[in-house]
Length: 391
Image (cartoon, rainbow, N blue to C red; front, side):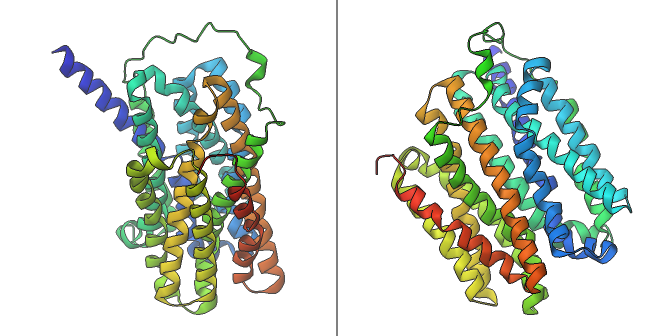
């Protein structure tokens, strides 16, 4: 009976971790496929339209320190539940407003909620799972996160919108409301004793060490991966419209975001051989760049194949980099390294696509936004080549 009870507890924890991971990306990536419909109501510039996707990415950077403070004061589970409630409320409210200012404000607050969720999940893992299952828990919520990208960007147009009479507002609400059930369920698993709750060692050093060269290397490579992925999601619809290929919009978002799920499944098999090795970093960076180049230089279905490859290898690169800090440093130092790398990466992942949107507005060519992302990501190949890891 005790064994069965333990299995049920682990199953419940893993299920909740997957659902929580889902909402790390779903509310952000639901916007790109809805962008043409939102634009029909608000008449936005390319810069503002892209910002509805990239503003939450900026908040992932700016809100990281708030998340750390919230965990210290409220605990990981309380912080996570409150953050997810904020995400659900603000994400649904986006579908109820006719004010552009309020739409942007709600987008920022939603991003803040996700930013607090992001460090809360790894902090909660040891309270729900024992040491042998921590890696599995991490893999599960990362899979949930990437599945959230696929559901938000890939399933919205072909499946959910037709059920809601083509309303982008109802679609946002429908994706958001189930999160309140996840908030309630977060309090169901029995928590293990927090053996570190009275550990006051190095309390001041929860801030990142900005002199750490690994922080900059990981952060800049993460910025390349995230900029290519989020930027392409933000401007893919505009690129297809420029080419007169809007009939491929649903398929483009479906396959582009499904590629991230495929990457997470591939890494379940490859992780032990690929993590903390320079060769896979070089390969995934190179293939991501080649995927973007192919997307820009081709058209029709072949360009969607290149988009799939871009997303797949950007997903591989993401997982390789997220897995690096605990491979390089012990516990708390690994957390500091990861926090600093994500702060740097998400800051750049906001400004680089936004700069691309400004260029597209100036030239009148949406494809120029993606060309700029490609050019600014080229130095990542040199960073991967020079990364101080074994082949």
